Length: 337
Length: 147
Image 1 (cartoon, rainbow over the protein chains, first blue to last red):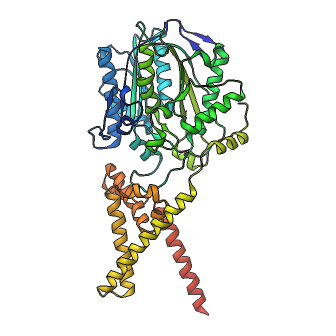
Image 2: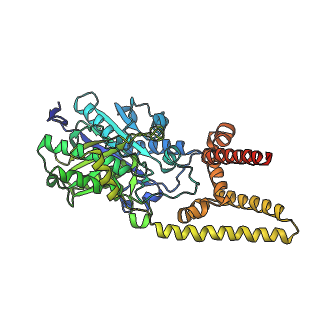
């Protein structure tokens, strides 16, 4: 059974093993620096469907099937799936997983959904409530633009702090036994809001949540940033990751060269015109399920901290003048049991 | 958190890069100017074909709206606007783009409740304030003419 360490952290005794994982990326992501890491790059942003929402559902369906196929199992052997997306009522997920036949628990954690769903899956597997559990999420540039911003063909300019929603998805399948990598610890975040109201500066809105969760993890466990080969936040992008470093420095935690952000890894900011960097549930999900887990499996990385960050506003709360609350969940993944 | 909200908002402002205002203004100035020059050329053409000034200016507006809608449909207008900013937003072509782009976008939710209802999500306020201002202006003129 897992036990609690400090106020916020859960340490798994029988660290659940990652049985398989899969990532699917869109065209623009496939032109970025991580192109060769993804399982699949789909250059048709409609994914063969008639609407963008159906495209995102297709994306989730495909990524789950890909992960199942890599694990060489059928949906019938998966006991539960935790999943979510950015759309109202999480329709990307519920329509995408409609035919899977796997018991389903939908989650909304905005862009923190990958770490949130993976945490839940790990708790279920470690507790013995599931032998095999799946965690997945996705985002699609076109559905996110429709829901949160302007029509695609509208002629507008974005400020420099704006981020580009990743079209992509990631899925992880956990097993009680396996060769790893292993989920060792999780720290679930608190909702933090330091008053940022600008929806074109989500990195700045989420950085304090990431700082809070990371410092909670270090104070709970006594670990240090130098103990990890990679500390990766979800989608703080350029502005947010700079702010995170400053916020942690004030608490005596220094992030060095082993720190990066998935929103900075997935795109080439200079060449791909994404302003501050990538964002969306699919950003941290597709980077985790490609570059990060590939390197953990190959032994290049031994210890990784993965922190997905989510901005929990809605277009309505923003129009009503409220600031942006954010949350960050941390997962410690290791390639030793 | 060690920092207060006020301190953090200040920190975030310092870290957020500013838009390149000088370059953006140059793009807006020249692109807006080019669109207006095209408009003038169209108007001269209509006058050459024998339309009077009032008719020619209405025909020019209609032509520019058509071009704005066409380039939106061809998925070109947003790419131009990314560079040109206010240069493509302010002329009447920008107004056409603001109506045609949601019309295209919300086609998937049906002809009535999708396309037709959402057509004015961006342009709606412009119409409300434009029409209200013209009514107020009309009333003011009417009052002055009483005396």
